[in-house]
Image (tube, rainbow, N blue to C red; front, side, top):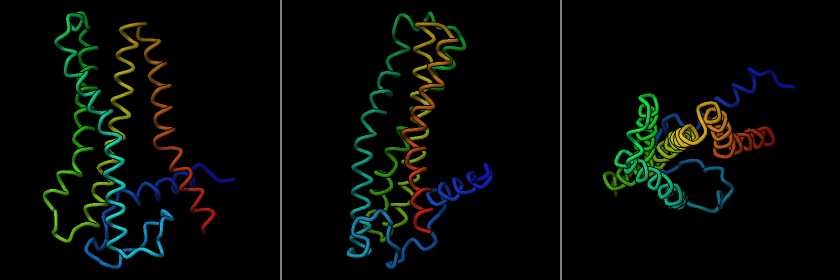
Length: 193
């Protein structure tokens, strides 16, 4: 049986792997990604191209959701009911709006990075940085969706219900977006050595 400290250290190693800088971003001998998809058969440039395409395709799924939330939040202050919000509800709305803005920026950052660094031999660093942007963007989206649910539930049912529904929403999103993949990664590491 593992102690809580050992589990925390394993979790920290997994998170660190995604968020630490690349040691040699221009190396043509970049190790395989470990995703199991043709690791032994791909040249480093082929792998980078495939991984970049996969990342951009994943962002195409996430971007519409965050953009719809952002667009909705842009319209809220112009509705008649906005004037009925308490000061704390307005502050909560604004925090939701800012979180969604940050998530939108982070999801779109890989495109800007790619355009600015295009053809400069920096694809590995671009991929690593864009991966970090996407993960942090998902974290901000988790917070923003949770806050939007809390604000909506507060307006409909009161603060006590909103807090409960917000906690369940946050736990669910953390579970499906973070805990499941990290737990799987930890299991794979245990199986592999």
